[in-house]
Length: 210
Ligand SMILES: Nc1ncnc2c1ncn2[C@@H]1O[C@H](COP(=O)(O)OP(=O)(O)O)[C@@H](O)[C@H]1O
Ligand SMILES: [Mg+2]
Image: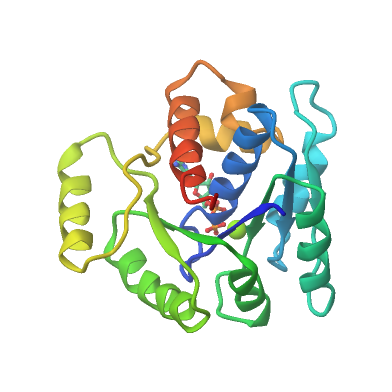
């Protein structure tokens, strides 16, 4: 059975779709069989995947955008013949976000260092707790000035919240790769963003059981 990771955060624009695409492509580049499922009706990743078809640098990746009653079966089917299943989720706490969280071995919550993201995160973590799932936070769009990261990290520690050690900086490479339907490890494998992607993927993989 696959390791199922849901990327969830109630705040729109927190980086869910970017982080989901980054993780999926990074695992794929490492030789894993990866399925990426877009459960957000905005279909950001469906657009991304359509762009991907045109790129020779794209590694093989299964993609679907199921919703509603089809979603649980799609997750189960993909989990059967892939090593990793990555789920992108809608920002609102609707049924599909809950289904994705319920199916996940790990819920990855991207968090930009801002009060709005911290507040929205609380709702996401409550949903994860209701579903008895495991959540871990990952900082996204962290400015190069380290002070803000330290402040947020301290606040998370104070609240005893789990934070991945590696995170993502605020880098145009993520958006540039995304626009081409790629991940940073495919578009710019030697860049700092790709280093971050590999470090985060490695940290996420440690949550895989046995
Ligand atoms: N680490 C990052 N560095 C720079 N831009 C980012 C980063 N992560 C996300 N973005 C940008 O932020 C915006 C929102 O990201 P997106 O992944 O669509 O968020 P969500 O899916 O949570 O709504 C996009 O324009 C995306 O390119
Ligand atoms: Mg999105």
